[in-house]
Image (cartoon, rainbow, N blue to C red; front, side, top):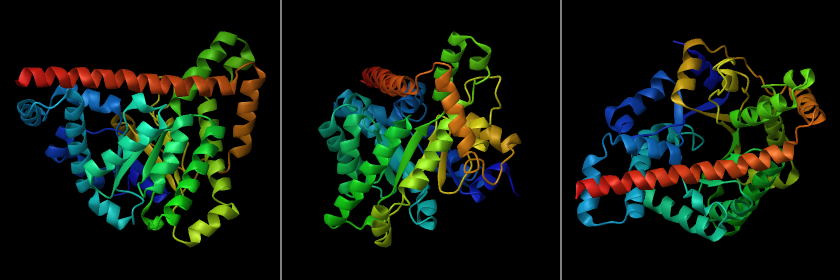
Amino acid sequence: MTTPLSQLAANGVSIWLDDLSRSRIVSGGLKDLINSRSVSGVTTNPTIFAGALSKGEGYEAQVAELAAAGVSTEQAIVELTTRDVADACDIFAGVYAESKGFDGRVSIEVEPGLANDTEGTVKQAKELFAKVNRENVMIKIPATKAGLSAITQVIAAGISVNVTLIFSLQRYREVIAAYIAGVEQAKANGHDISKIHSVASFFVSRVDTEINARLDAIGTGDAKSLKSQAALANARLAYEVFEQEFAKANWAALASDGANKQRPLMASTGVKDPALSDTLYVTELVAPELVNTMPEKTMEAVFDHGIVPANSITNNYESARLVLLAVSAVGVDYDDVTDLLEREGVEKFIISWGELVESVAKALEAAK
């Protein structure tokens, strides 16, 4: 049976679930999503793990073992989260093989407190990769200035990377350059570059949330008429950047040696404004070689009533440019918005990490 989600996948969009928990894994629910919802990958972050572990579902036995072993809270977090990721990688191993490595991916993020620490990020990325010990894991690294060099170094080590927290088009260009430099170094280091994959996670809904608030504050009719248009415009122009950067001569040489493009991934695709369609950031962002990572609520909305076009990006570049120009013309500073969102994104993950530490510390203490 054809569903809107299967149609989305047929039109070139890989559907990755933005959620993971032990209960999803052991119940068989995660595996079921491969067939019933065309899900071909999973992304995680500190917020997702904090939520899963705070509920405690399925973690009690391992927490008891870790408490008995006297491990630190930080080591317990590594043990708990990497087990979930490794088990999810095993569930998606078939998808990984069938897609030749493009899908069947499970992402795990470096500790957010390392976002501005290049050396610390590289070290932990390598440790997480070794700990999960699955070829289809992706290590998430934020696209901060310090993250750019880390991305290059981790790719150069032959490790697949999910670059997260991208908001601006300029930073996205820098991320692609960091990836290409990493592939070049990986090749020089003797790695099989056909095995290295990467996605660049471009955040969507948060752009509208911040710009809409600024348009409301400006308060003019022109400003208010532009509400809830900037995020799609920004995301569509990101796809244009993807097309442009991977059409250049420096990439062609690597591609001929088997290198894979770093695919654009649309993240933060749950709609925050109830006045908007709950499928907006999925159905309006359809194009080949794209990934959309969705919270379950958004995925179910698309499954239930999404109307999926063949392509809703590449014929909208000029209108997208006009939207961003108009937003700037009424007084919204694009660079200020994207800089703020990057800082806030890191801060929010650090807060979630703190909640995760607190939850695990309490669970370890209770298990003693």
